[in-house]
Image (tube, helix red, strand yellow):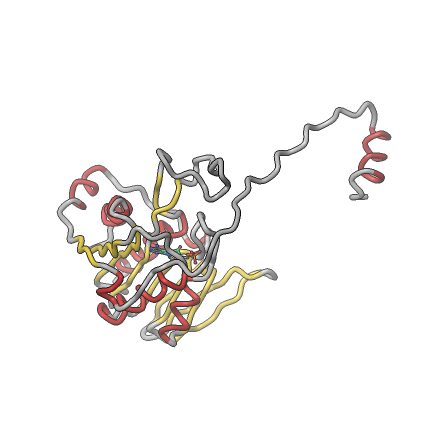
Length: 249
Ligand code: AMP
């Protein structure tokens, strides 16, 4: 079985993002970029399934600019076998990405697609679900455990009330939640080896998809700053403030 893992290049999770002065978007000039953290978890899960003998090949794919190659190289250094860069300079959106991914799935015929549950830049949490709909495949979203047994995948999902386990008939879509695993670091020898691994360059048109934006961002705002705290003189004053100002008691 092949496993396909889509990985997105996003602003590094440790960077404090700033909004452009004109409020049009987040500032990306000279900002450190990295693999979307949930996609690292998805890559790790695919590697673990391969190590457990449940898969033969892991293909990673990224839809984005030329620099998304670096993100793919990181996934190859972690242990993916082959990479595809679907090059575009458009700002990608979930529906366009899902359409490209459907084309990749049709061409590569994976038994499982593991995505991140959401990209930390747009927080859409839509791509996996849209891809499942376009393919007519079963989906297990917010996965915290994946067990493959023959042509079935048992996925434990993180839901509001606790954990829910669903059984999917494969081929299927899984989206990775935070507690699925702890991704490994790419070792230096593996980073060197990754340079020799196959990385193909394609365009959205090669997969019969267009990724032109369908949404228009009207405004981007930073969250309002936290108000300064105050020191209270007594427990009574604290209780009074909690009761009468904050309204939490
Ligand atoms: P989203 O629906 O935008 O929150 O993204 C959910 C997941 O879809 C991500 O964690 C990735 O696995 C995948 N994805 C989204 N955009 C891209 C992209 N441009 N290239 C590759 N994978 C993507």
